[in-house]
Image (cartoon, rainbow, N blue to C red; front, top):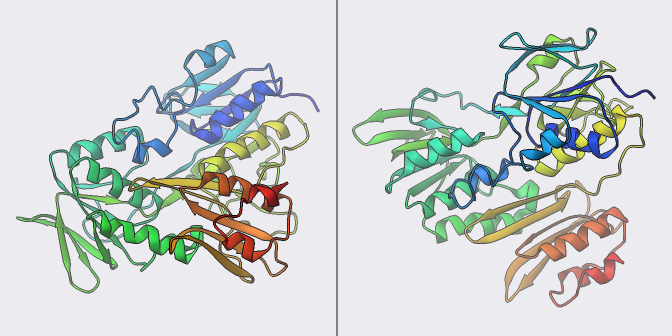
Length: 405
C-alpha cells in the first residue's frame, strides 16, 4: 500500500495526537497537520484533578514537549475546521485556510452534554471540557464558594473532591443511588460514593428540574420539590460526540462516526478515532462508544497502522483510572456482563477489589482501590483468558501475579 501524500488530523486531543505520533513512529515521512482551535494537544484527565488544583501547569499537561512537533515535521494549526472534502483531499478552516489531507482523521471528541431544563444557560452554570473551563470553574469557587455538581460520575466525583481542597462547600446531585456500578461493580461503587459524605460533601439523590437565581444564589430544584442553593453549578453528565463534520461529508454515524475495526469510516480516505468514533463490526454489531483516555490513544495507533497498510496492533482489555478523596481507583475489562459472578476481596472487612467472572470461570473484569498492581495482573489474566479460582481472588494474601504467568 502506498503511503498518503498528506494527513490532516482534525482535533488535538489524545486520539489526534496519538495518530500523529504513531504515524511518525511507524516511519511515515509525509506532511501531517493537526488542526484544533485550542492549539497544541494537551492531556485532559488532569483538568478535574492536578490542573484544577494548580498542582500542574498548562505546560505540565502538554502531551509532549512543544519541540517535538518541529523536530518531527508535524504542523499544529490553531484553527477550527468547518468542512472536510475527502474526495478532493482537503479540509477547510473557519479562516478559509485549505489544508491538504489525502487522508483525513477525525479526532473531534465531544462537547459536554447539556441539561435540558430551565436555567441551564445561566452564567453561573458551567461545564468542564477544556483548560479554559477548568480555569473558569476554579476562579468561580475561590474563597469558599458553594458548588453544586449535577452528575456523580467520574468527572463529578473528581471535581467534588478537588473543590473541597479549594475550600468550597459541595453539593453533589445524581439520580442514581450508587453511580459507577457499571464501571467498578456495586460493592466498590457504594464504598466510593460513601466517601463523599464522609469527606463533607452533601450527597443528594434526585433529578434536577430547574435552575434559577434568587437572593440565595444559584439554586437547583429537584423533581421532589427540594431546592439546593449554591453560587456555582457544574453540569457533568457526559458528552455528545462531535460528528457534524462527518455528517456533512456524508459519512455514516450513530452516536459517533461509524468506523470498522481499522478505524476507517464509510469513506476509504477518512478515519475517526477517540470519543467521537464508534465501531461497527463486520456483522453489523455496534459496539458501545468508549470515552476513556486509553481508548483514544489506542484508536489513534490503530488508525496510523491502517493508514500505512500495516498490521493492526492488538490492544489489551480496556482500562481506566480515577482519583478522589485521596484514593486511586482503577478498572479493567467489563464489570457488567449478563452472566457470571462477582468476587469481592476485602481487607479488615473493607472491600478493596472486585472481580467479574463469566459463566466459564474466566476473569473478564476487575476494579480495585489503591491496588494498581492487582489491576495490572488482572489485565494479563483477562487478555490470556485464564480460568481463575474465586477463592484465590477473594484472598487478600494471594498475589494475582501467580495467576497471570
